[in-house]
Image (tube, rainbow, N blue to C red; front, side):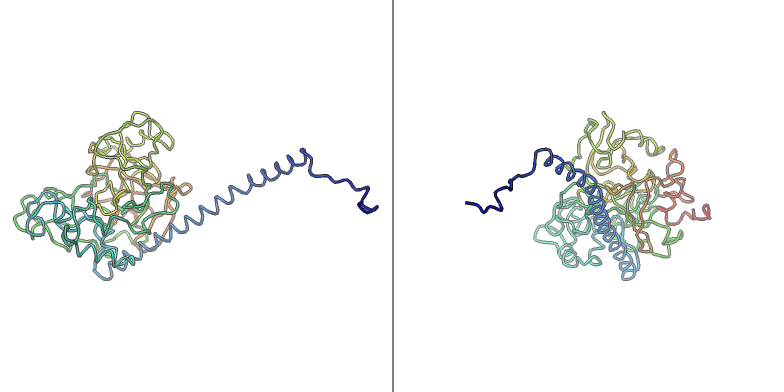
Length: 391
């Protein structure tokens, strides 16, 4: 029997009303705290992403110090369409890079990826030293370096995918590595293609393989602190090319490249393919950017400073990565803008609202003079001397 002192005590728990009140309070607190937690997590992801930008900038500056030139946007061994491809005139995909190996390969020794670079340069029993066609699979490069992926990316896929992009400057005419197109060896940004001598009718290996055409720091006449080198773009969930697809209105335009032929003269035409964050229904598009870090085509690793950050992307009518005209603005899942590395190694945030000037006209990769695309275009060109306009 319980002691007399406990006989009058009633045992009771929470009532249903009290329990509901406690749950409501907890729910309210979670609702208040969750945005703050998500914001803190994104801040940490953005910080890590910007650290990757910093490392890329240091890699480029160390490359220039060691090799007296910035890395090329596109190059490697061989040249597409020539019977003189290195080594020994073979044209098969495992004998050379088709002249389109991306500049990220050149940077590997300066990104603490010397083993990967050595394995690529060594080749194997199937592939020549330097690797196969840049868009082919190859053991040493089938998995991209981890630092080429932004932690804020929402598409969780690794392999050969990446997020960081090389600047092509402010030109819509981005060119191609075909031997007959001498204009395609030049670009208005800090990265250029490896140049070819006598490209319309190459007769010797020397005609297609000079290796001293890179940009030097002294060539950046607009100032290293006012010229962009890297930014970022979003990768697609699937790698879709070689056929046109029709948008249903559910596809994110920052993961896609729409087919718009008129961008070669009127970049603003690309703005019509976007409805909010998605492609307008009925738009023809492909999704291939960011799925092959070794391929130096514009639609694989490039961006240009024409349309504003996080705007839609457009190419011409090629269903592969081979358009010679493209507007490829940076894109990210950061709030209201993108990260960027400048030629002095600094890292900055570029707001979506940056001045893009006149989008009713376009620059070719061989164009000279001031950029028509406002502050954004000026940051892309290395020698437009646009700063005089803003002083």
